[in-house]
Image (cartoon, rainbow, N blue to C red; front, side, top):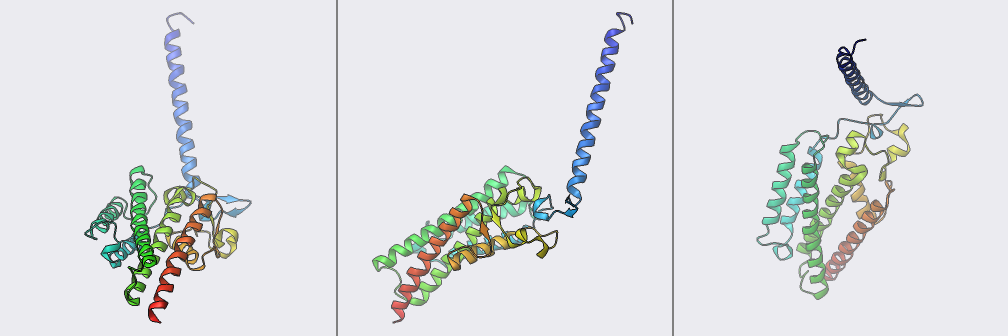
Length: 265
């Protein structure tokens, strides 16, 4: 081999190595894509949907329940609201909800830091507004400035309690295994909540995975029973969140029911 041909041979070798690297990368991508498109198997059995990549859940369930939580704030008297006029904060929350729906109206399976930040901000605003109303109502009941009539008191208490259920359902849904997008992509294998279908997969179809309705049910039973029922918290943050929700529910029910009974007597 002559000295003049060495640079050309080296350049040709580099080109071949680059072509080989690109071919291997394409093959790996195709294999991974096929792996996620087909039901994954372990020990001869199809893995359940909550343990593998899926299409993601539909937006309408969480959007409808969030709209209900926003509307329930209007049922709370203006003196218990954070801002006045009372429609300012619900209007802001409605704008955030509309932005989320327009940006991702169908299935929640697209990674976006902006959309996740908007979703968490919306949940935080609803939580703050509801907590403010609860604290204002509890303070008024203790001081005797609230709860003169049983009917309006029960309506206000029911609105606060139901908003508490929805907003904690949102928090559970937003953080379990990293959130709805992370669950759809299957990036986190360890759940924060153990549903019955996870412990007994033979009782559920292979395509079952937790959706917002399941987290709403979890929040409702925890608020009604003041303790876990058939869904068990596994991580520490899940246990602390359920403890906080139970405490809020106890305060709401105890104060409002006690005051209403006294009024009715």
